[in-house]
Every structure is written in C-alpha cells, then in structure tokens.
Length: 163
Image (tube, rainbow, N blue to C red; front, side):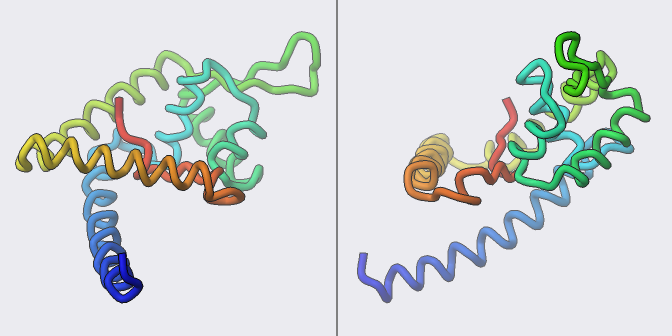
C-alpha cells in the first residue's frame, strides 16, 4: 500500500477505533454487574481462567503496577469475589482465587457483554463479521510477532472478547 494511502487509512482507523471504543466501553460497562468495574471484571476473569494467580502475576499480565492491582484485589476481597490463600510451601506467596460469588459475577458479565456484541454484530452480514475476526486475528499475530515490549504485554479489555 502506498504511504499516502496507508496514512489516510490509519487516520480513518484511528477515528473509527476512538468512537467505537468509547461507545462500546460505555455500553459494556453499563452492562456490568453493579458495583464492579471493567478492570475488576477482567481481573476476575483472568484469575478464573488460570485457577489461581499471585498478585505479581496479575499485575504483569494486565500490564499495571502492583499497587494498582493490590487496590483492585482489596476491593474484590471486601466484596467477597476473591480469596487470598498463603502458599503452604512458601508462606511469602499469596495466591488469589475467585470465590463462587466471583464466578457468578464473571458469568453474568460475560453473558451481558455477549448480548451487547450480538446486538450490533448480528446487524452485519455474516461474511463481514467473519472477515472482521480474521483481520483482528492477523493484526494480533503481527503485534505478537513484532510488537515486543509493552505491546506484547498489553491485554487491553476491548481486545479480550467474551467466550
């Protein structure tokens, strides 16, 4: 693609991403269970997928500081959505595990997110949706292969599609 054409496409893509992200974030956040933020939801989801994680693992995977993750964990713990468990072999290690109440929150949020995405994607032709997914997968493969550094670690919520 010529440089001037690529530049024009990048400008359009940035504009579309900005508007799409803002509008989808607002609607998706509105659909979350009351009292839980998007960051808390994604943290619960990650821990649930892995079974258990340390605070350091969560911070690294989400690309945020330990202090930010600790604040999230404290709120989730007070709400009864995560438990802290000391490692039996190394008492310095604290594992985070999602409680049954936390699992229910994740299930409810995933269902709500799926409904929002279905509402809009169902209005597009099936071929367009499949092509959109293929393009995102290709872009993600390029980022994973060439991104390095922060781009490789960035696990932005909007890129984490519901199951």
